[in-house]
Image (cartoon, rainbow, N blue to C red; front, side, top):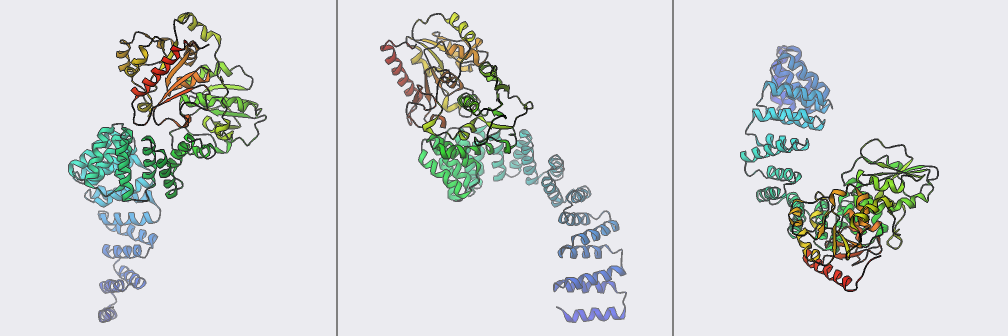
Length: 611
């Protein structure tokens, strides 16, 4: 401490106690030695002599901020603002005091005042947006960012932040425009390229997203996240080897990156390496035990392996991953251990029509628990089929799952949680067939229309819902079915809808009889199925419907099929009598069609006619 300077100042004050600037200088010397209390006292004495001195008020307020006296600092800044309402720094610093007091909205108002008085105050715009986002005032944050962009058109981060916010508010076009502007200002702005890629990916523009990821990685090659995210897009494009390389690079940069382990596991599985996939997912959970996506994917691998004892409980993690409506109160979830006697239980369909058709078999098992009522909520597409089967039963009520309020129930169970509730293992799958039936009035019109079979009668279904994310793997282009359709067989299409390319190909296959105008719902499809000797289908709801009706089904599966089909080469524990035709590793659909062709040839050579 400068003792000589202090002594001189004290001497000046002793000679003239009104020397306020001496008190101010003493306060400064005290601050240099971290004597905060003494500094504050000297400033208060100076202010007592010069109560309208703005600089003294600001010095006191700043000292109070430094010593975390936020309430006192706020009071001091308020006085400073009264002394000079055009002094933007007073508003800005008061906002910081208010923020520390937890008074975010007042702080926002102070910062808005700063940006109005001084639009060049970049930090005020930034902190105002930060506070608005923290308090979930997203639309207001957009307004402030637009003002920031207008005042600072070359400030790349304002464009970037506005783009991120637009994307969060589901305005992808505006988000892309902001990222494009940011990149135009700063072409090597890796974060903007990365965010642009994510926006394009969310829009389903995977090829363009891939290009944007390339730019992001080129400009910033040492970050793991862009490699991981590019790998996800490569998976969506079916480029699994390239995706695997990206995930491995992400892990090289960050060996503890749980999401990259999870994605690597999924890519390896889709690429046919189930053993390493299993190991990767287990590693992901070691790094992040609560990683829902890793638990979900690992659960499906366990179920595919038949590890039901571990797989079904782990599969409950799907509720943290899959898009779904809000579930009822988890405390009302029936897990199989609670008595249902005298109670109403709600069984909720979930995920796909295939899942509902496969797991509705458990409803009769629930009935054995003697509930007062079973309410089965299903998609509209299955309502007529299920309502005709169970709608007249005393215990079972079928309702549409259409977003309307659910009726009263005591307990509930999602349909794919029923195997867990019944502690299903592979040795005890409830596989009695048929568990679905249709009324004669649905079959008779088809009998009248088709008449007696002229030869072996086969129903065929070659593609499913084009919007299903696995459709590219499971569906077969119609032209690849040509070797089958040329056989001496009576072919009937079970497709309710056709794709554009199908309409072109159907003109080349007049031997394939189409009935789509008559397939209004699944009761009509079921009636047609019952007229077939057997069904050849890819993995769609039609295959499940046919098998549940007790019809023989030949199922055409990609190399990596849904976990429900387990890993048995040709048989299915869920549907006894179903024959599985699996794509061999690294082979095409054409090779599988050749196998099916030979199987039909064998049937024809035996003059087989199903009863």
